[in-house]
Length: 234
Image (cartoon, rainbow, N blue to C red; front, side):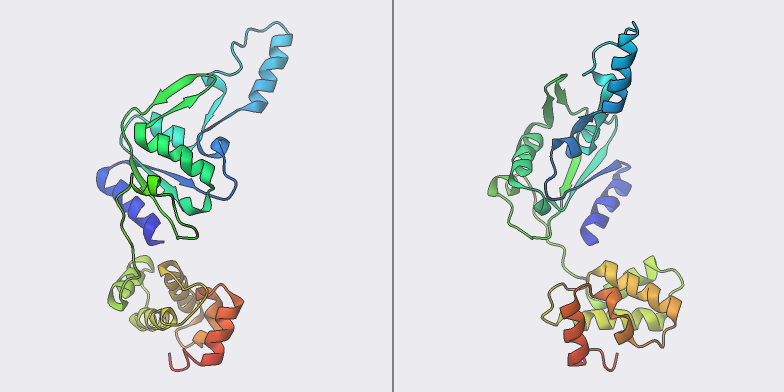
């Protein structure tokens, strides 16, 4: 959550438009850069058969701009968030090298598209795999660690208006304990906020062990915490 919020905060501070590309396995340029509006092209073909002049099928009027092309062509300041780049494959990562070097791309049917203004680009990674050195050389690296207990409690109070202080303190204390455990997936700030919201809805006296599924998303982690009594007095 912290990485994405950093991009949002940068966009707010600079008055820029935030454009987000969520990376995933198997993503190609049709998801990230551009695609063609095939239904409209089909309708144009049928209209052409009836004698209508529909122009070139592979032209701007049938082009669908995906996040990367939208960021290059936007008139005004842009923050481009390329989220979880480590989930994409090597081919897409290689494509980003050209984009981040020249801030231009080539669409074969219409030619080279240059950025109207250089966007501010944030790439986030959860380190599910290592990124190539060539891509990392084009970036300024910043590690966002978990906040300390006081900072996290302040975040909860900000994101859950009206949360009782007892719930904010209880939840952040429990999460700090969980992060000291050897778990498959440690809870992030987003889970802390969700946990606080759950306790607001259920009542602050609810047993935290009964709501572990809000903070932990792996069965083995829940079983390990429950068996170890990590939150017995929380």
